[in-house]
Image (cartoon, rainbow, N blue to C red; front, side, top):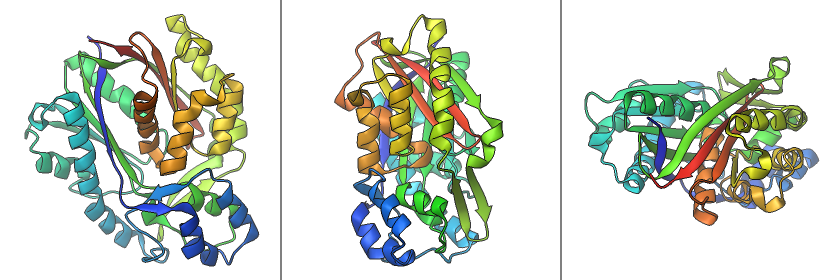
Length: 347
């Protein structure tokens, strides 16, 4: 038995113009610091989305409890919209869902979003639930692998939702380059997929992981009294440059494939330099990472939700033909690379 992505859906809060955010809040927040201005202008983003617009609601002095209370309010409607869209795309009703997984590193509540979402959508009282927390930007990939294993092994119909609200974690002003970078990139989104043991879609073939524990301090996501604080070293792309080709070749080798044989690339756009490194080390043409760059431009970095948005953009703009392969890859704290191989199937 196999596991196939049968449908996808997404939801975002209100759009915010990237330049408008700089002019209306962050320029003042950083005292028009020249480094912050350069970071902002080179982020590769035109539009972001947020449940909080700092121009009208400054949460940078809020405590973590207040931010988590706001997460509980804002997360559910976005999750409902994304999952409803995925179910409709897959032709599956909420009552047919056997397993629900919710992924997030930006907010927590109990009862969790998984419980509230199942209730809101009318899922069965016997639906099995899993919450994956605080893994960061790459979490969609091990999440998909875990959900696919359950789907294939037990014949389940499964939903995975990645729901991230980084706009709740704006930090107090400080002349820290890592915070400047984080504030220039991160954005809110919910993205969901439905998996089933058969049918047309993208079949999950295999997953590989690589963690460079010696570089664990290069990317961090700390819980503080003032929300969650990102640590993001400028050396992250250099670490990825060392590992990314080996990871992709390890993923492809059992299937007799090389990077040149891949029909579609859904790569997490952690930032423009990360995409540049992937393009260079994998010998890709610029258009092969077009879905990633467009997603970064139009949505920003939405943590774990982002690579699902990229996959959806890839399938809408340049659908992979039946029998073709997609590399679904993301990066995050650890420093960790995760990649899954997908194959388009007609069922």
